[in-house]
Image (cartoon, rainbow, N blue to C red; front, side, top):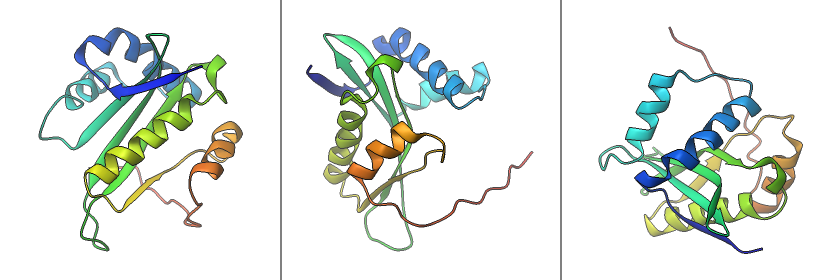
Length: 148
């Protein structure tokens, strides 16, 4: 099984959307259609530091990853926040997620970033198993306050 990862293209919308919706179902959330449309636009806006890659298997898109560059007070180069990663159900544990994360690492290195980081839910055992192979746990606990 050979997974190919590439930058997302406008022609990928029909393949991206079900994966994006699947990601939302997985995390039991419902992102408004207007935000989904805005997200899609941002992925192709040369000014917004938001990017996406797709994973293909036999020419079919089977996984997506979104990542965002931002500056840090701790380093000269930017950090990369890997915000969303999702693969088709039947392909988890088959190398698709790993290929996507490694492709984000490559993009981050190419841009001079000093760190890639992300979050996952504590109950997402499949992802945690993969992430433990690809990165170090930071030991930090996330806090958040929803506004409006």
